[in-house]
Image (tube, rainbow, N blue to C red; front, side):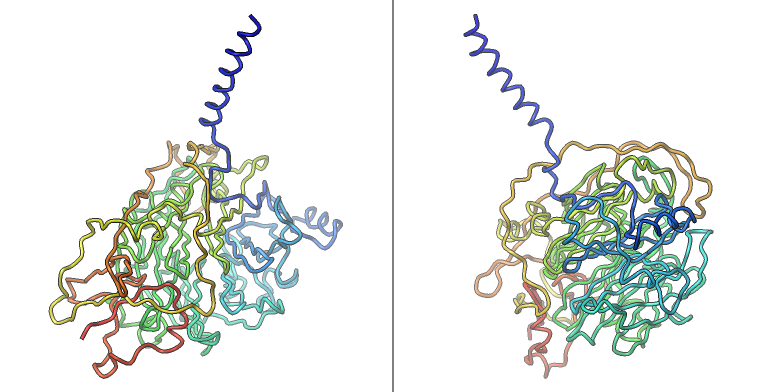
Length: 568
């Protein structure tokens, strides 16, 4: 009898445990790994006494702080905290990653406490949102000069660009945007930084979400100019309805927001991709246009409209790697998506790199650092603004993972896709009338600023775990103004954008198979370059220049990038 128990019951129990383990996957099944998390933010005050004084006076109200931006450089992870409510002691902060490897670290003001004094316009930063570290070791920060949000907003300071040298931790430039670059509705949260042939050949681009404009700033000229009221900067009236964390709300006025820059193309310029927040569509423009102050009034047709990403595809943050992989948040889906810019911009070429219905509720910011590691900040922003966060729960998280790990086995991983059998992507058979055919792509040399993509790692992650819903109590907050309104109950998150693996290839120089991405603008009769900005008109050089080759600095800054040349 006992022998039967040992031989029959225990093996059955083992099988049951194995089955339970298969049904309940662990957190390790997710690609993004949690690095830091907080129930509420804490700051590194100079002493416990000063912290107690700040709490008593209302200068520090922990439940009023929301992180919105992240950036990595060396042993520092920068985090921005806008002054939307009272009690925010610092807006530009960082984590010392040598001292705080994980956990819930205190945020350290950068570069110091004095530089985070609200209202000290010339010496400090009042409110920062998204920030960017460039290839030259500089931190670019736009101070909006604002306190409050919506109808509570005041403007104690003007918009000002602040650039810090991360080696010396000193501010090396402050530039106030002139009145001509803003309007009474201006709200700027996002920044993109474009480095050309050297560190002085630098431009920054700023998206005016509610003033519907795009601002260019030249480091070398120390001057800015504005592209105003292009129809592509405006929200889509059909895409103003949002559903996040069980909350239905309307952000119908939100225009141009997230931006990303491609590597330098064969003409020496990059392409800026952007999307309005209330939109599922992406648009593009060459930095050749944005760098030219004379083109602010006559560049309408230089902007290009791409397809929609698919349903439930609002995005506020995007970034592109130096080999053409764009990552972006999908705030309706609690997910981070991807698209390889050598592919057409259509839903079948978009993938999901990770999704988590608890941890990735409103992935507010997505960045790729100098080592090709991805950083994602999630903050449950709509719950903070429109309902009530539960401060006994984890509300804010910072995740990280290598880019190669995130895109592996998705449609964005061309190391898997580029060498398979051709698919049925429609490729035009001939060039538009009056223009020559597009020739084979050319592979160029190493980028002088960033390392090349590392070899594909060996990973063992499995399918994503079952969806976990985060549905907070719906306590209406009538004090939130404007488009942050109309709270209604909602069901499960929307449909996920397709991530079907597709391969598309053709034979290039030396028999190398490369992605087909030739797209023509049949309406305008122009042929289009497809090295990242696949819907972008190439510059047509004079015949005497066709054999001259590219400038040295352009060749030096290409890393694994395909280009298309005109054939004579």
